[in-house]
Amino acid sequence: MPYPSEGQLPDRVIHVVGKQFAFAISESPIERDEQWEEISSFAPPVRIPAGSFVEFRVTSFDVNHGFSVYSPRGQLLAQTQAMPGYVNRLRLRLSERGRYTVLCLEFCGSAHHRMRGVFFVE
Image (cartoon, rainbow, N blue to C red; front, side, top):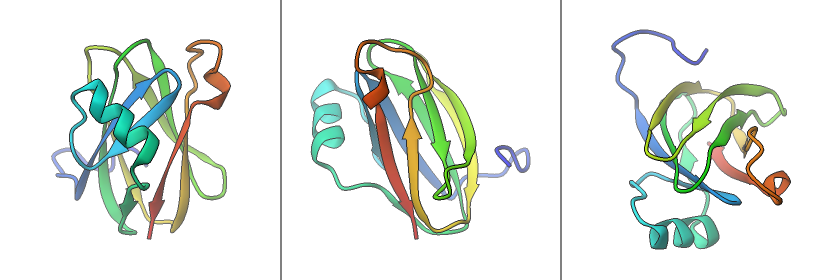
């Protein structure tokens, strides 16, 4: 359930920045293009302890993107918009262990179909 209770603080905050045509996903804020390049290209995937209540802070550095989280079984769990100049907050309790896939659900250009990311719950 995306919003289990009002006022509950997250166990983890994960920062997400979309930019044509990848997501940078990090436990640290991503504030500059150089950080985005480094994280989206070279950083290892974020690893989250199973059972964590996570807040994803989602934005974009260029155009609108869709940020959707799929479970290890391929089930769409939640989605929000990644928009330039605005941070959306998406909260999820992640209990199932495995590889989670992030896909863009908003057409964002010619390589939209390749825009994805991953993180792991352990």
